Length: 375
Image 1 (tube, rainbow, N blue to C red):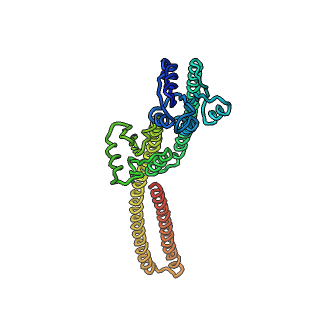
Image 2 (cartoon, one colour; image 1 turned 135 degrees about the vertical axis):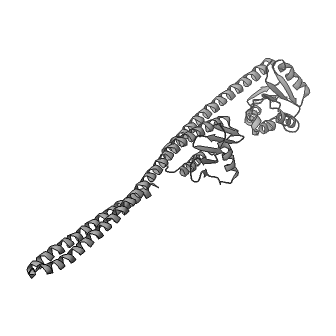
Image 3 (cartoon, rainbow, N blue to C red; image 1 turned 180 degrees about the horizontal axis):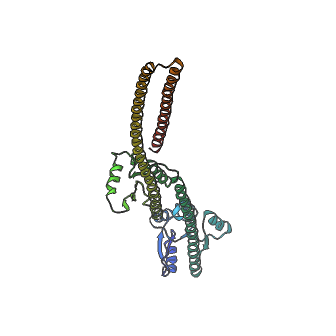
């Protein structure tokens, strides 16, 4: 016996009985005594095929057929008119109402069985073909969607290379999640402002904080999913749990996103550490340079003062000695000119020392500029 269900609609009990006797060995039989009864019954159970009389009280067969075709559940269900009306225009009216076939009474049992079997098989083949087409379309659409999603991941890889700070990475990964239709927030380890797309005291931040202590990389909590790596924790608040295929793809994409972030964040952290080390070394160099420059300057001043004092004393003594030597004026002038020339040379030496001090100051300023550029 077939699992197909046949609904017989006829207001005459003897007609229903005859059709039932012909078909009940092969099919499950339902009966309706009027068009209204037929419409009511199909709302509860949709049959696989309907045998419909034309002349009935209330809704006739044509009206019933048109009503059934307007309902989504029975829009494609095979309908065969079984009627005593045989004129061509009456048969044509049946087809115009939406029927698939038309059998005239008195009923030929073998023909009825043949036409019911044919339309059931045809309907099954059409439904199968439609489902295959639908499945093929779904596969094609899914492939196109997957390709588009992979393209978004590739774009994120390119964009991540332009990111310069840990804070910016947290914002970018949340923006990338938005392109998949997801509402996300993130926590970035080591960032000065570690929370992205949520406030520090928010419920989302508390969930992220709790997830940091978990050893699991992916945590599913209803429509929420947390994806972790060594450098970042990502919280998705609206996972598509009602679509198993999409849900699985999205989790795979999120794992890739977090992995990309992890690599870039490690590189940014290494750059940050290197810059910090460079700043520390430059700072120490500047301190040493300042100390040495200060000590050098003090020694130069001390030496200059000592030499100047010696020269001043020497000139004073020379003037006193020259008076006692009894030299003429030309001789005294010559000796004094030599003494003053020595003093002038000392002044020139001082100017050179001051220029050297100025040059060292410029070097120190350059070191400060390098230090500021690394911070």
